[in-house]
Image 1 (cartoon, rainbow, N blue to C red):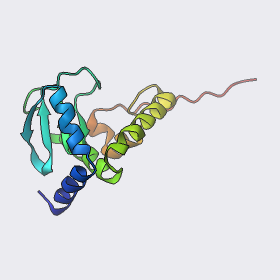
Image 2 (cartoon, rainbow, N blue to C red):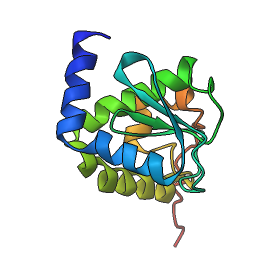
Image 3 (cartoon, one colour):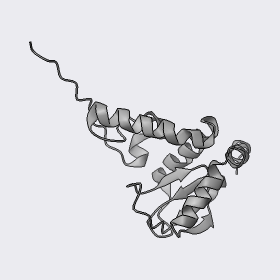
Length: 140
């Protein structure tokens, strides 16, 4: 683990986002394991919300999928979300994320394509489409 990853890990414990992630993992009856980069993996998450292959709360990466699913580009994407929690003051990121999701949906009809958090984490790495903005000019 790099020095920055250790700092991020501590920040996400202090801002309570990792603790919240562990709580949600427990509610979803996920199996926990230590991952790379100071992350904690929660496999087999059973709550049907949110609809995503994986999602991150603090340094906890939750997925409905079995062990071994979190690797490569998706892991890079979720790792960037863990950093966002450190910069966004922890669980304060949750309402900010919901606003970004709503803005993206209003702009293009997809919750992730224009979501600033997903863009900063890498749309391609997270498996999100590059949906164009659906602006229409009204003809009067």
